[in-house]
Image (tube, rainbow, N blue to C red):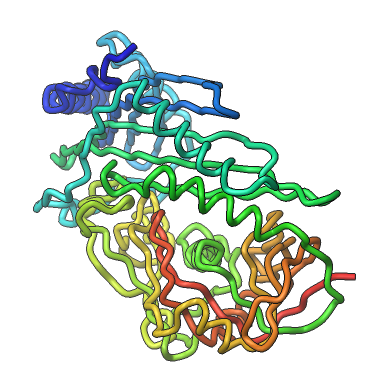
Length: 452
């Protein structure tokens, strides 16, 4: 059981070379079967996930996954097929299935590969591959120490949903009939802990996690456990508040969702379908003039870094919002053609999206708000992408005179995203960096809070 958990991925260069050959074979087979153009992707992923709950190992799961997909074009007729079988017969069958479908689909004047001159040519090493050679016993010990630190924090921590450790390493390859063929290995490691606290008849749940491409940059297991415990304890004694209008701070890990709502509103598919509250807003002021929102796909070691998007288009650092003005959309080649524009290199999404931080840390941001609501959890989906109407269940803390007074629950926070963006007063310097979207806490001038 002490065997290192990723021996199958030790020969990553050979694995990548095999996947590149498979993609090349797919493209050649598509051409042989009459396709005028084609693109294909292949990936391999292996790793470990385990959970320790109440001091006992609850689950241990080893994973090893293959994926292979191809999209073929017959003129402007398009179809796709995929398989998890990487054998030579499966390659031919997958291409044949896609070609058979494409012959019966309707023509789409916007269908096709991204323009050849946009393909990535310089592929820098973005430092994405850092395997963690941890044994199962070591992984169990790390998860156990995390949960133990959490449960021993306070006698009011009465139950645990467990501490979970994940470590994965994989390689992804993409190619198309423009002659583009490239791939890269990457890793992702994480440790999380979720707990239940009780004080009298009241019970609360909360969690904490750490994630990085490098295991040595993860937070210490004891710290993860203690943070999960403290967050849970802080929520005990939560109460309702009366319905009111007040300023609202969205804690940084919650504010990431507001940025994702922005991206959803300026995505090509939303725009050409006219299903967005930011239709025809390019060049318009949508935030206060201190706001700059940007992406940088080429940051070394980051979770969303990549030198090319899902169509092989070169990625680049760029501003989406400058001085509060919307300067760019988020487009792949298909949506760009529908809009009469050029792809922004965002097939597959945005990469390392960030909003510039201000000078205020969280205590200073609370003082700036003076009296209002600090939101630390959101529930439900209540965002209308067409109108921008925003109404979601929430929990957090009531603030008076710049100080947290008590936890609150069973409330709803409502407004409209266009108004919320315009009423952004400050972005804190408590930046959330654990995902593909980086932001500090947001202070919104005024929102409706429904309580009792």
